[in-house]
Amino acid sequence: MPPGWPARLRAGDQASGEILIRPIRRRDQAAWFSVRERNREWLSLWDGTAPDLGDRPRSFLEMVRAQLAAARAGRGMPFVIEYDGRLVGGISVNNIVRGSAYFASLGYWIDRDVAGRGIMPLAVAMVIDHCFSAAGLHRIEISIRPENTASLRVVEKLGIQEVGYAPRYLHIDGAWRDHRMFAITVEECPQGLRSRLSQQSHQ
Picture (tube, helix red, strand yellow):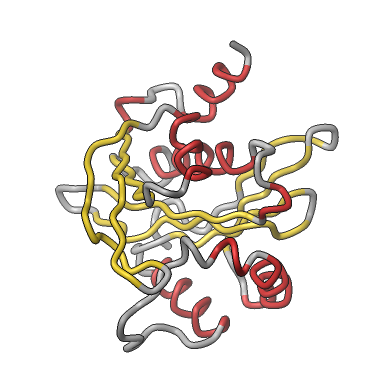
């Protein structure tokens, strides 16, 4: 298996709420559809679409099969987020490139019912720390639509710097959308993002 995959990342406790980040699996289908259906209107604003479906998976099981195949090939790490034992979101490391680059992109989504509780900043910090340590990557990039204020707050809380602007970067909600580009390298957080987030919460 590629470095850093598979993995199970944990944080929190019974008092504050337990977070588990683990690989997506086929038997997540019912829970995944339940949370996605409840959040359809909210998530559709940020979900990727495609002008031509081509070879894109057409079912949950096909999606999982493709994602896990990419993970075994070292091209990605598809995780789901559990909070107190319930599936509440997803966070995926995509487009892993090694060679002279050693970078990847990160995407994430969360159930609106638990948004604002600090789950996603912590989950992003945990996964980026994992990418820099166990997976040995050097740079992680996150692209966010300018209108997505909730996602922008995540990178702001983590101190991830904006590095550029990409007009018509991704096909989202039926059209080519501009994105703000954020990135962080391992040198920028020698103690880890989770440690940085904890320090900020105590200031």
